[in-house]
Image (cartoon, rainbow, N blue to C red; front, side, top):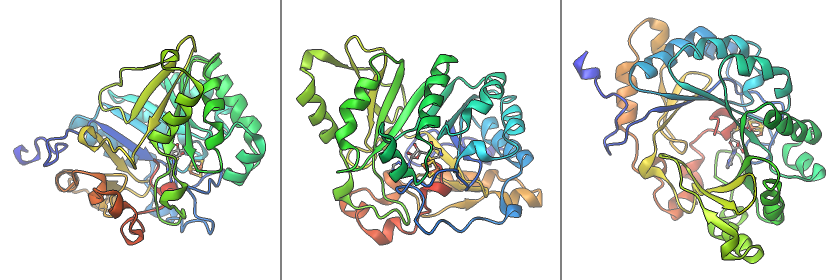
Length: 335
Ligand code: SAM
Ligand code: SF4
């Protein structure tokens, strides 16, 4: 047992207490930055974790110190057995949360509450109905917008994630900030990141510095404050004085937060990714199905985690297609 002590500590001294679990590779939206235009090759159903396997594998992580689990996808709520997954995972001693596109979340308010979910992150990249349709390739703006209002009314802590793409929604940065005026919501601007098939290039990305440039053009220095970030927070948080909500920037490209990274990712087909940008993964599910311990595999995967962004420690490396094309598409990682 002793060789399986501290299996969640990597060779750079980082402890991993946060596990993100992707429940499905499917989605009811088709965001262009996430889902390749030709779709993705879906795993056969038999290769996906069942709810029992999700629970047992998650429990192994919890036994070794994971205290936070976030469910993601694809769209986690399209998974038919989501109520039982929530019920099983909520029996573990963790803070359980979910990231959703909110298209159908109104149907799950009671089940989310019953299982102690308090924090929900919702993707919304535009406040304009036509632009929303363009980026998601689906006509669901009103449902998503109304569901964000519903979640707030129902008392959930809501963060809205907006991936910024130059020339597409960077002119909405101030509209999004003003969205926080009368609503207790945190809008988080995410730097567009490269993944397989998403046609990323650096010129499409809106950086942290550029967001702050828009902010400084509109508001005076006395109008906003820099908030204290939570430990292991990936975002730099700000608030306009007098506004109910706040805004933040997640700058994985220009200002990575790898030093304090405490996250691991489990894909829907049971592969452990030690970093969002990692091009390698470790198969937990196959070993789990043989009945053998998955602890040595977890330990090895965590130990081998790169110090910065899956080894792409410079912007030059991040711009090298052959490095990030070995990674999955985001839809099959889960953010
Ligand atoms: N379907 C859910 C949703 O959209 O919130 C959960 C899964 S989605 C993959 C998780 C997060 O990843 C979303 O906030 C989405 O905006 C973000 N994301 C997807 N592709 C991205 C990219 N290329 N760069 C930055 N963020 C991305
Ligand atoms: Fe689906 Fe979320 Fe990806 Fe959009 S970002 S395609 S909603 S998984």
